[in-house]
Image (cartoon, rainbow, N blue to C red):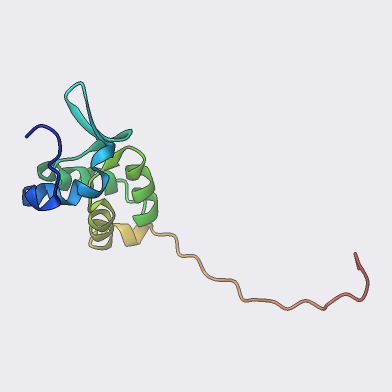
Amino acid sequence: MHGWPDKRSELTFDLTAYWNFRSEIIKVDGVICKGNKLLIPSVMRPRMVEKIYSSHLGVENSLRNASDILFWPSIRADIKAACENCPVCPQYAVQYQKEPMLSHPVPDLPWQ
């Protein structure tokens, strides 16, 4: 297939996820990109997810690092699932405790 069809219904099932951003997909030296991000084919996604979360940075940091340079339609869900199912990640997770809210007296004058 060369180019995109006129209707989404004419696409094969695996390409329908790319329909909404088809204008951003380009091919540079044989590499398919979405803007300046590498578009990862479905067969490579499990290996990429494994590489992304292997440093056990947690969901948000892993997503931030990956989404700077990589793209596939379910990247957020895939990385989140991998991190949540990883037995090692909870050991490295920073446990932030919320500080209690403190009330302060209201001043009578400015800069008091």
